[in-house]
Image (cartoon, rainbow, N blue to C red; front, side, top):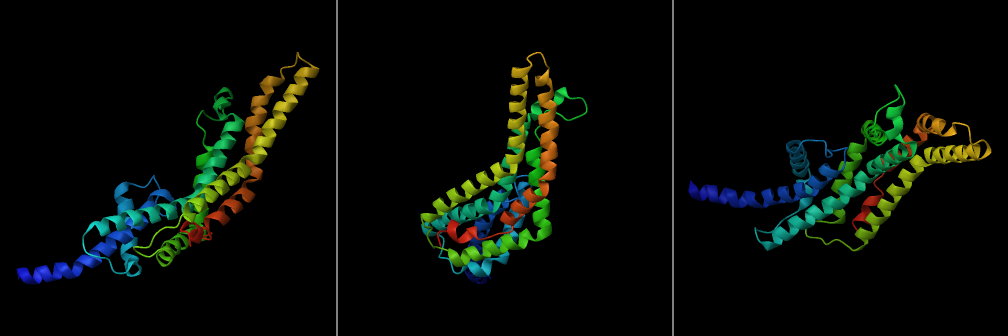
Length: 255
């Protein structure tokens, strides 16, 4: 009986190791990308999702060696690959949050408390755009795209394969794209805010006695919200296109 259990354990050990390595690649993706998890999801749920996807992707993991230092190195490598994939998948959602927070900054949402019935001190546009993009991405089928991207990563970087130095450059480019997209999201509101400040400055110079400064805050807050509402369709389309694209994957993995 003991010998049979030992033989069974020896036969199951490679499968369990491969399952663990596949789950390690998926785990950072579940932590970073809100489509498949995100930081708001409880840790036990993220672990369960990563384990389930790791089991589904187990046939792509291949054969692993016995328990040794090589396996520890592979664990670190799989976590690094998953981190790169997760960062690439999460960047569109980070761009939405960046743009929304910049909108909140230039609108002066901290001043909304001075306007009765308008709002509160918390900046919510970033979270609003982020949650909107998550909902649109899920409805448009971003989850299968992400799962296919994780599965394709095994073909690009198999177990034991090394990461190229070009991956860091690709991540830097994606960060630049996220920042540029966030700035593009906030650009109309930034332009309105600057135009409002310029108009107030010119008005005060022409007629110093007018209370133009008191009107600047309501115009900036309400006008910025109006401009964002009118441009929300274009913003959502741009961000959704980034969320549904997996063209970044080969570059991130250096392939």
